[in-house]
Length: 150
Image (cartoon, rainbow, N blue to C red; front, side, top):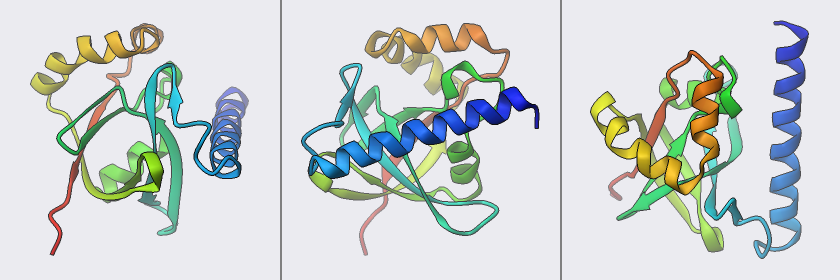
């Protein structure tokens, strides 16, 4: 891994840690939105470690219990680790506002679904358009749908 990639990954992990800490220390009163988008806490099993991993993410679109998250990694040419984890194991948990836990199945949107959602995603946060310009990678859009309860 190149030094630049390593530094970028460390910066992302640090931002995630700081965000989670602020949200925890404020008892959920601070850090529930970023750029007017709701924040979710994604809990997913690591594809290599088998351990539970937690990542703070924004959700530009949400409806009927489903949440859309964008695997942009700030326009990096590599997919984010959390995305690779949910591709390997799509059963995950989201912690949404007020600490509510939602068991979800995550899936990558089809090309047709992404084409329909992308303008709405960019309307929610213009930065996504800039991220797409920065990379040749097709930025995945992930749909997290609630799992039926037994």
